[in-house]
Length: 485
Image 1 (cartoon, rainbow, N blue to C red):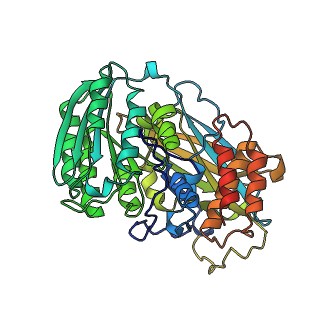
Image 2: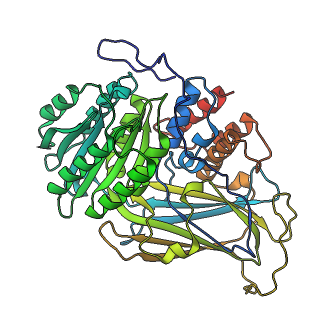
């Protein structure tokens, strides 16, 4: 278990209260296999949020059972970076696909679809207008909340440049501006404002968000990176507090061109569902900070990728060849599913991709002619006659739509995936590793679509796919699986 220490040397990682009864998570209904003849299209929004994995890590490190609805398999997979190639030309991201036999279902194949955002160096990123929106209510008093938040923000401040400017808005019983826009070169002033923060009062989250957007809009940098960074346990209880009210507020405010990043902290009354709603509707991303290690990852080494968007409203639509695929199942992304008609509708919101970010999606497919307990019969269709592509070895076509960060019209990219009989032992190490994380997530969710609940099977896949692991995150995952009972 990673230990945290305050300035006085006191261990603040051994929390007295590990009761999670007041935490809230949105309900997740696991995706099922769909027959291609009745549902040939699968459409969803990308998700670069990584909060799900670090939150699960927190439960396991505290020796607690992981709540089923806290397990978001896609966020677990996407916590890790994969060795996808840099995009070529003007494209903001590259596309990688791979298909092989499923490692946990002998009747199925597994398809991997990977995106990688273009790496933009710090010198190539435009000036930033950042507003820190910080929860200093009484619920943030615990050592793993405001004290950890203050230490985490110090990591972020070290990344700031002279052309960047920072404002700090706090909220408790009321909202207020504690730091007017300040150049990133004046780190002492910014750090002093952070250090002086203390917790107390109820949580007027809605008023804080309104004030933060007001400050961000007043100091908007045309062509710059305008973003609010909200840090809280999500326990809004004064003012606009319902998920619907907060969602309506954020949807209205995102028209300003200001993006939103949410940082979750703490346990006991952690409101994951609200944090996810805010990030999704605010054209932003969401991370859960459980340790200083995670703070350094999110706000240090991955700072610019987390905060700088290179493509927005990124949607995927997969069309399956009924001559090859009998049924398919998207692993994870349950709360990112879109209607098929949403794919071409540029008014429909979707996920954002940051500089250097990787995104991975896995599909299980049941080939035509294979009998599977997971594929249910449906009544024969009288009026539908699928047009089969004669002699085609295409399994599926992947379509991507995205917008430029300041654009309103989407662009389309297409790729096809050809069938093969590759055994899973011969796939890339990244594919093996992503599959191991997906398998562990499905085990935590007690999925009916896997044939093993053995940790040893996860570990074997992960060790075979660990590959280069300079930061040690993949090795940490293996240790985490070994420690979980």
